[in-house]
Length: 445
Ligand code: GDP
Figure (cartoon, rainbow, N blue to C red):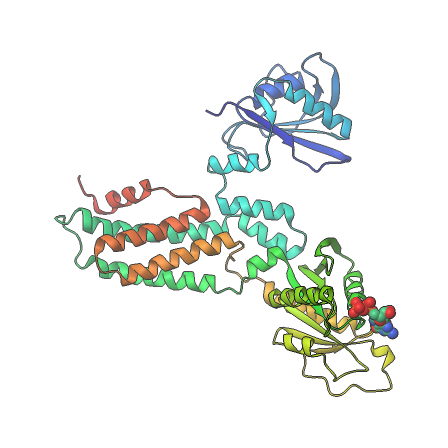
């Protein structure tokens, strides 16, 4: 058994009404009795009032609630204790010091509680990732996706696929290892159709427009246009208009400023870039290069043109226009008299950051664009590159399996494909293959 018992502040740092400290490991119960001055452990999974004291000299620290979760019915699967104290810095510091002084206790490392939960089979890797995403979720759509993943939806899908492959593998292996047994005829022909179906399902799952990943990272919009066209003003107006600005990201370079905000529950990362214009100045050229490379990776580009100059379009700006571009005519308050030439289709907008005119339409169109690219349907979505890579690897092994000649090679391809899936959830176990072989075929009875 693991010797060390870990503890950490489970609630956020800083002053608050209540702070929660969590302990996990074999010494958790004993630690609770010591710090709570209790002769016996309180009833399991009930909040119990306790006076917390420094176990070294009995000095009172605080009065609060203690919850005792005996193993294995706890978050980590180990003995767990939660201590609810008042959320002041001095209280938390004194509690941490008192806990450190107890035998076999040490402060937890980052992610250690979830790691133990995974190791004890309480969470698979995708659920652990869902938990991390839920803690980091900044918008409603991110929260919904994280909760689904924490609930095991994604893990269950991959596990279902992996078990289907293990079944196929068991049949192929039985054919190789036990050729004299009375096995169904033309085994391979029974295995191919389900593998083919599975490969189709995996390819369909992969072909999701990266929704889940985008939702985690944010829908990226880049604002492009010549200097003074009104890029910064538009960024400010758009991000300020929405009440829920969650944070400002410090630009990676001096030339790209990013703001993350919540648009109808979807996270949007909007970047203001250096002005696009012909220039011999190396600094300006570098800024432009960065702006254009940023534009290449963006989900949506806003190409800005001053309404008074429309339809005159800068060649650099013109070069980036594609189907993921909105044309935005700026400063329409200055050009009221001159009606701009016909707008190029429905993906063009007229706005004034100064008066706010047209901003509502632009905002709703942006929200709609974010929704169409980020909204996940009823099927669970891939949320990480790690999943995608493993699924691609699995699919390529299945492709090879379907084209393989010899049974030995076919078995190896299936084994590798199942292992790729197992890596996503953290379930990689060769023992289950043997179990299936013997259960299905009753060989060696
Ligand atoms: P950037 O260089 O493209 O980021 O442009 P700025 O946002 O800094 O704006 C350049 C100038 O245009 C500033 O003086 C702004 O006040 C002005 N400006 C921006 N938007 C508007 C607008 O909608 N109407 C008017 N009248 N002026 C604007």
